[in-house]
Length: 299
Picture 1 (cartoon, rainbow, N blue to C red):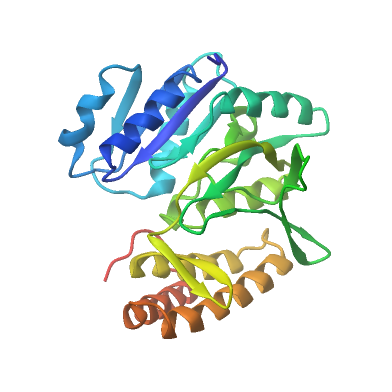
Picture 2 (picture 1 turned 135 degrees about the vertical axis):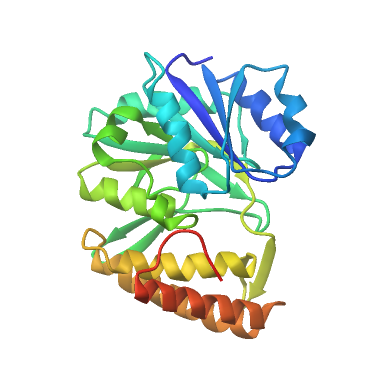
């Protein structure tokens, strides 16, 4: 068990057995587990699983979004004396054994190269049945980095938040998660902001974690796209537009993201099972992003 790291799990209407497995795995790897619950209506059904392990629960009065919940957990971790890192998790992630220790070791080595913001595992995404690449822009072009077969680590511009090990010292200089985004692009924004401040993110090919993104996958011309609820489409498009208005975000990222989301707009407006709802929510997201609207969606 690491005495250097705390874990923060953000929950919202979690499935009890999946959450229990995550808590048990992390309680054997970190000093403290914080659960930040975003006002789940089913809290009474799963709170009993917390009894056998040492974890602390922070309950939000309302669903304030992933960024606000993460910040509550990060602030609690920063208040713990002697902690150096905080690992953050979604409620349905499945970390491998000794994952935290391996990420810490990578951080110790990589910190000799320069300031480290975070380091995260190589994701296997179940709905699409693939390992998700790490993303890094070079000469204005996004490189999708996959395990070459004997890889250990690689640089990245940002990471998927779940499973990432954040340096608390770096967090003090970079700042907390952007609560105005509510959900989606929170991890991308923080990674790009860290990069602009001179901190590097890393991905570890030799550290694995399993995860699910979205509800299912949509097959399009040999590609498998994650399918989310229409409300999530709203946040994707609104927050992408909001980030395009920010000066510390590179022009290359803005052009690449707008192109990618433009293609997805056509696909989900014409091929998804909820194409009408997707079209409406994506359109509203673009409109509200152009208006500079932030926070929780209000219809």
